[in-house]
Length: 505
Ligand code: GLU
Image (cartoon, rainbow, N blue to C red):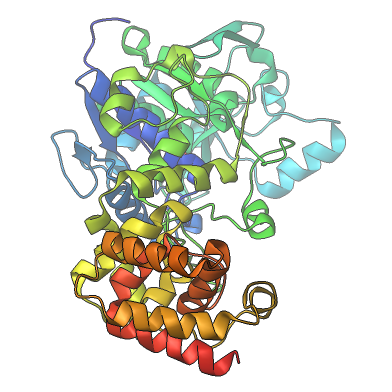
């Protein structure tokens, strides 16, 4: 790599919720920038007012806040290359459109939609390019006076890029190598429209990447077809020397592997494709988000990092700092990455285990509240410690641990059939007496006393423990039984034993 300062950008168009693929693109840019001590810039490409969706920009900013992916410069932060909204840069683009026109790298075209349509019927596979442009109504075919008067009269026009045919255009891609395309397949792209006095994506994107001194363009594979045009634009401006390096990331594929990941795949299989919940302002439709579904941001970041890149070994769990250290565009794959959402769930499980019981307890408290439960912080932390290994999401802690907070309202039928024996009632009454006589109610003390009692009476340990668990939990699950009795306390343990004996007679 050259010794140029690394400056990369994420340049979304605010057309709706940010797709998870866009989040991965931003993450790779971030990792790359941080690794090289460079800058990461947020630029909003909002020149297409037709597709503008209110709230989308705020959504994008909030998503990255949640994920802890930080920008150094750009929208909502500022910086010396601003403004960072393309809609605030109209005059800049106009100037550069003029430069291309003056250097005969672009021309003005007046063809109306009807005229273009007529050409399309006349010529099969019509393309506005070197082979057809001289048959059209543009500044290459009309006398200069007519062009000037058409503009003066207020006729709408577009500015088109004049692409020279029969030339191999090389896109040097850090992931894909040398991608070559013949310029004859490209059409004379519209760069500017007089109707809204705005440039199209291609022109604005190139001008801004140049002015903002972007060193590397790291973006999704869907932009690869635009790259030859971008290379030609750089050249037309005479900016070859500072052209950024390109890296087009692999597509995210459906979990089954065929075709591009879509929102419908998420709806069909039950996983979000957006970082945060999104309410579409037009349709009112709400789409689920990773945050609301109970994912930890660290898990989402780690999961996404490995969709298209790997560190060269089978290490999967990595902190942001480790990923910054290990990330490498050379290790990004060319072929699409299957969106294995189950792996995302696995990552969430792993990150829940990594977090302290205190941190998880803090997230669990609101869930408890929803169920009408208030408990001491110590108790919640202890319960989390005993149950978190069984869950993938914080919300699942309720099912895994509700018996610590509320006595079973009923007893699972199957478990009763299997585990409540004829003498269970008698044994549980005796067990209650044994436990009631204890001063030290620690798990260890209980276990010692209960085991000694079982041995003396020659009871069957399994039968006793099963019935005891059924009485405390209401079914056959849960952690070590004496941890449960310790946390719910002596009084509650005795009450639950008594109740089971009454109900299960
Ligand atoms: N505005 C484009 C987008 O929405 C930017 C593509 C690029 O990174 O060049 O993704």
